[in-house]
Amino acid sequence: MVNLVIDGKEISVKEGTTILQAAMQNGIDIPTLCFLKEINEVGDCRMCIVEVEGRRGFATSCIQKVEEGMIVKTNSPAVIEARKVILDLILSNHHRDCLTCSRNGNCELQALADKFNVSEVKFEGEKTNYQIDDKSPSIVRDFNKCVLCRRCVATCKNVQNIGAIDCTQRGFESCISTTYDCSLNDVDCTLCGQCIESCPTGALKEKENIDDVWKKLRDEDTFVVVQTAPAVRVALGEEFGMDIGTNVKGKMVTALKNMGFDKVFDTNTGADLTIMEEANEFIERVQNNGVLPMITSCSPGWVRFAEKNYPENLEHLSTCKSPHQMFGAVIKSYFADKYGIDRNKICVVSVMPCVAKKYECSRPEMEVDGVRDVDYVITTRELARMIKQANMDFTKLEDNEFDSPMGEASGAGAIFGTTGGVMEAAIRTAVDTLENRSIDEIEYKEVRGEKGIKETTLNVAGKEIKIAVVSGLANARKIMDEIKTGKSPYHFIEIMACPGGCVVGGGQPIKSSKIRSTLNIRKLRADALYKIDEKSTIRKSHESPVMKMLYDEYFEKPGSHKAHKYLHTKYTPKNKYDI
Image 1 (cartoon, helix red, strand yellow):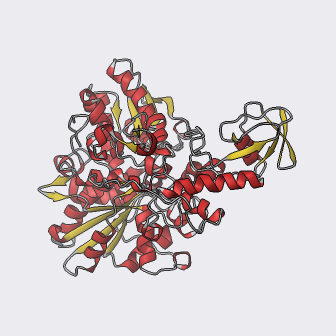
Image 2 (cartoon, one colour; image 1 turned 135 degrees about the horizontal axis):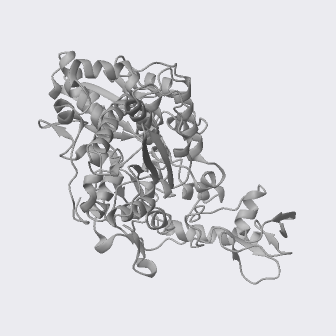
Image 3 (cartoon, one colour; image 1 turned 60 degrees about the horizontal axis):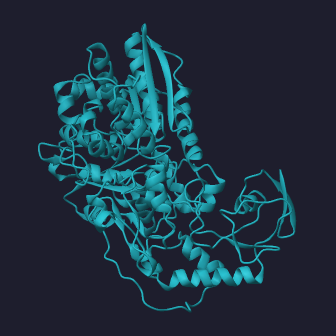
């Protein structure tokens, strides 16, 4: 252990701890901007400087390791004045349109300006002016709001192993950009949105579809249906001051009905449908010597990554559409026919924890007979903005239920929102089918948890089934390289683009670096989904009455000709620098 003093407080910490970590562990606040725990610890912004007794100059606390007997001052007059100068310099080249910024009230730069009581910028001078990149259907890049913290770069390069963005130029001309300053739409970006979650300001955000949705809701000739993903209900409340992981399903449904949606359905039903088709597809591949391993295809960021980087291995991907796309197709086919609604007058809106879903719904593969499965995707953040625009006090709304019959789902559908959930849901149905009986033990905890690659072997109907669950694209690359070289031992693989799964997707509420340093956001949200599953009466997709109704009345059986028409798709090799 190393003994030191910070702001007069004697503390002991492990050797190798930084001053910033030591301070955090002992309740001492040091302001940061570029710091992002375990992702970006480079000391670029210098907001975290401190004084160390006996040394000239300031120490950058996020990278300076503690030493025995060190005496640190985090709030001396000299430190405070130096931080103000640093902040002033950052603000001098920042477009300070805070009131119209999507991050107003949730901006780390704005919070620092408030903390240090910035009332004017002393170093006004030349400002850089960059064209806003909004070509992508998912992400908008506004470098005029960038503070060069490099958190997005570290996330893209070190966490996702993509490297679509980097710091270019030098000095005053330095900027975060892409190869040849192309749009994110035209480079090897998977549109996962993890860069948005990492950004401390409004330099990166989702492409909004709020106005499009309001327009449809006001159109009396359009029948507007909304569906909500499982991860949304355990995160939406955070936008209204509620605890991380609070399940706000009932209030969310009420809010959506108050906003004027004609039907409010649950994407968990679409997840059940995905399992029906995906489990059947896996069983067919196993029994008929099909291409193995089979890999899940419900994460559009992962699919885009595979199309661009492993086009020769696309036959390993399941042909199943993702849950919300399947459900959109069902709404515009079965539901439209059953209730006599012209499918061309139905608008399907998906509320998703993911910005890549915006890209996914615009793909030509995601339509049937020229009709798009899903018309608009809005993120959890966008839904929160719409609720605020509708002037609702969200925390005081009564609880309500999804509309029947398309709003009823199993617990298996709920856990789709976290890494391992798709695999666990699929196993529950696949095992029952292969064993030709109902298995009581349905919690497969080997595929749960935060490890980037989880693996286990199941003995099912006399067969050994090796499975893997992969979270994050850096880990996906490892698995795909094994497949590419013929060394993969697996039969079935789940891959999610976002580390931790949809609960921490690129469209979820953005948390500051301080919150990310002290709370396990992924676990809190994931635990809430597992609780939904545990409390569910029906916990297997194939036991859902809605699934039985859909197949009895419309699709006949999983894998049927009609099921393939509406619920399956194909993936196409793409040039690495084409969408």
